[in-house]
Length: 142
Image 1 (spheres, rainbow, N blue to C red):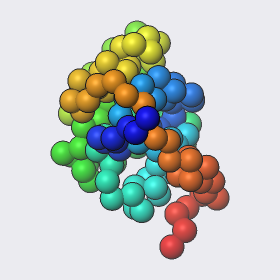
Image 2 (image 1 turned 30 degrees about the vertical axis):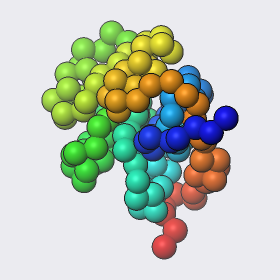
Image 3 (image 1 turned 45 degrees about the vertical axis):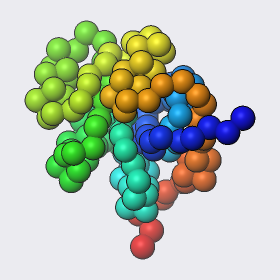
Image 4 (image 1 turned 120 degrees about the vertical axis):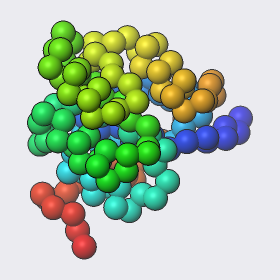
């Protein structure tokens, strides 16, 4: 079966939650840290959407999404905030992200939100394993 990839989605800090997105016709770039994601964006020209936890270990308090939205405000973003944290939800919405979901949102809610945001449905996904396996020592290579 041939699947036409309709969008490239960068996920940051989702710790395996990206698996549900394989049902969509998107190419996934999976990163665990904000630094990895920031460095990958320097090389990746075709990112259509970003999904990130609000509080990343290396970039707490939404720092990755704040930096990303300042640089590329036109790219749709989804923030995953701590369940019940009104302050994180308000901060993410104030930043202008496209959607805010609680970290405990169901896989169906996550998948459907991404599909609606990107205007895609069904299919399968092509995983970019090279980008997912990048390990950085602390700063981007030149």
